[in-house]
Length: 438
Image (cartoon, rainbow, N blue to C red; front, side, top):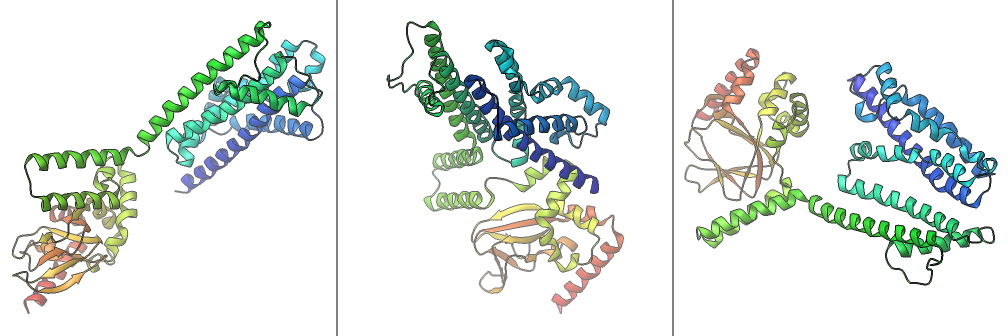
């Protein structure tokens, strides 16, 4: 347990560190190409940020040699294995990104060489791309939402780079009013990529490079917006896929009832039942979810969901916690509609019920008199569970009742490993029966 907490803290630290790296990588992706186009050395706050970024990237290299990614935190890799895997994957990219090439591009003399050197600094953006799967895991967002966020992030960077490229190839007077020129270039880039194209800024058709650059921007824009539309459509389809499946199930049942010409009042009751099922359980069945989990998680899930229900039952007071955990796994969720008879007087029962939501009435043999009302947190049917005796009352659901049931075979299987508790339960059941008979 302590090791798990320790690993979770390290995982949270690496997640926060990755966010910090992403911020600095974004700064470089914006600032370095801008400095390259304007052709001036970083100074002042920009000099400080560039130095800080290089220092942080170097620290990041040291950390990557010692710690695995967050999603591999529990894999138990040795530090030697972690370092070897890092050397084979991201080390070269991270090392090149940590070297401040932009401090030297004025002395290079050739713009193409300077561009190539500074491009190495932008390799850290590839690292941001690799964070996507980890962030999906940590922030628990829909996969489609995270994918669109990353897409818009990289689209914004691409628009920035495209605007700087337009500034460069159109030979704009960059130094007259740098900010104004950049905004004009960004305006051209936005109108071209979004395929709006007002026509007030067009390429010089006598310069092939400008025409080719415009074609590239147009094709990129068409592809980008096709990607956006496709992903939004997929996201809208998948974001509520459980509800879609629920409606499909209701439609199948509805068509079946219509084909059998069932009475309208029965059909209405079925529709109300499915509506309640969706509003309270969102289409999920606890038993199905638990069955798909590994056994260790299954116990923890069951303990979280049902512990409060069991603790309210007197016969489980002071019971062995291990036994309680085993019993919790065997609890089965069940739902009853208003007026349903959960138990009928005289029938041989073998299940005990725990009320999670709703209330039930304890009725007389003829069903005409209400002896008691058992509300949320209550239970009934324990005599049948313990001794498999006929039901001594009819239990009817007042409204929709969300219950958990425990059958005798599962109960006997668990308590057979706890003989002291088994004797205690038998004694309690006999006392209960003698009290009722008296």
